[in-house]
Image (tube, rainbow, N blue to C red; front, side, top):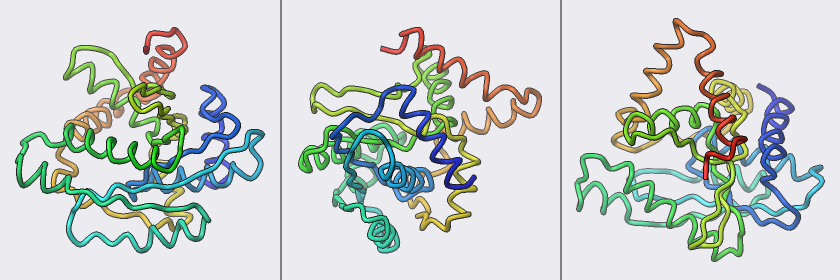
Length: 238
């Protein structure tokens, strides 16, 4: 995937669901992974010619994992000329040391989102951009179906009334393998996840299951994605 292909896919997501409006100030949630770094690249490039004006900041929530170097990511945002903020937290100690939760993902995610939203509001942002891609969408849809008993993919645009923030997901039309290629082609400073449960989660279980089923049905991913898009268009995802 090259820059033009990424921009085209991201713009499709933005235009399809009216994710960006004039004078938005958007906080990009930066984990340091390939997805969030690619999203920052795309939004910065789109900002040059997109018909609606908007501003960007980038925010990383430092969970508190030891020996994590955010220096290369900070340098990347200097290059992009996007203000970059690191929010220090004790989430790791709470989740892994104090609570010792056997299923830590939900609590960790909730606390990270809370810290991200708080910083976004402090910076006068009205929107927060997550870098969820097409594969994330279908994996989440199946996770809610299998583990919660409902088909409930996350929405492209979600309003959080408690914080008066919109959460937007501009990368819904971008395939994960293409993001991997883009990150490699453009030498993005991808930070390897330091999480001790990385690769051992329910999401990983669903991802592996989809990969196995796709060997016998090459249309599986697109069929699942189409079901999610129809869900949005039919107004079922409230």
